[in-house]
Amino acid sequence: MQIKVIYFAQLADLAGKNEETRELTDSSPAALYTTVSAAYNFPHEFAHLQVAINHQLSAHETELQDGDTIAFLPPMTGG
Image 1 (cartoon, rainbow, N blue to C red):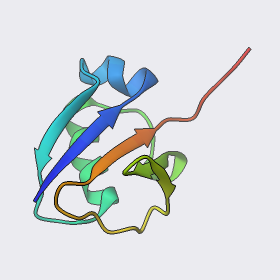
Image 2 (cartoon, one colour):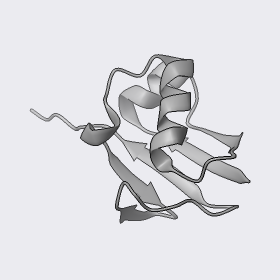
Image 3 (tube, rainbow, N blue to C red):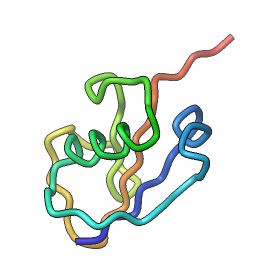
């Protein structure tokens, strides 16, 4: 299945891109994050992120479907 991944803030900087399409065999957002985290050396644990699937905040356990868009939202800091 193909999933569009959107990166924001620090994750976009580390990935060197704002989005990409990934081919998956596991429908778990956690498994996808493990893959991209290893590829781009993301510093955050999956449990500390918010997940948006198809532009809606979603539970970490929500299964992905072919053609979905997912965004991993890192913790925000402000000042």
